[in-house]
Length: 126
Image (cartoon, rainbow, N blue to C red):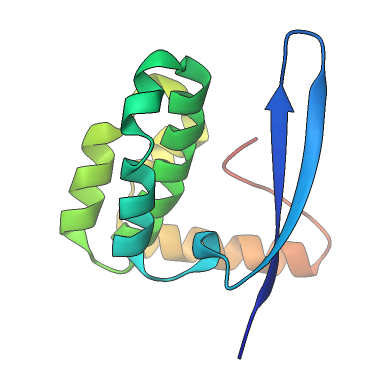
């Protein structure tokens, strides 16, 4: 079964922001294959050094992938990602979740899903 996903990318310039919506099938960002996603993140390492905003964006992606690795008990992947994340790029909630045990993260995710069903949306990114 093919999945349909939509990526929304924001491109910021000094006084302008462009919104680009890209529709793709079998989007890698939705893949459960941690190793493939880890490989994708590594492709941007050299560009991150000269673009601080890209580094911050990639750290947010590393955080999300680290949470998935922690839940799936992939400690090797979690450690690789954790080392690469600059903590200053994460907000307080993200730091708290990053250091939480997997069982708590799963419970928080279940609570979040229940709240979404009730029409209340809360995220670690706000």
